[in-house]
Length: 125
Image (cartoon, rainbow, N blue to C red):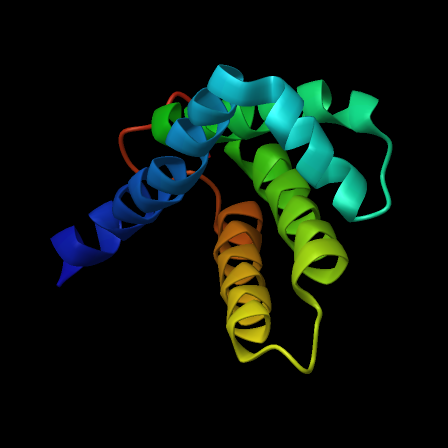
């Protein structure tokens, strides 16, 4: 049981990185299209680049376990903000499911913030 507990944070970080690193990299292929999506949530298009770079940095941080606590806190905020801005549509079941997915991912990031990067990380808790 100790080895499972020891490596669970690493597994969690890898799974979080698997969401954000590819998502950020894929958005590089169509920044203009993503900027249009950013504006659909009421934000200015120029925030597309910071959002893309943040997703890449967040994914890399989780994968490497570098500055994981603070990036976990920032990731939780990002998930809450994007969930509320882009997925809070009570009449649309799919969008509400996406909102709750964002809330669950935010919870995972809060666990990283609270407990640190764990084993096999650049951070030393």
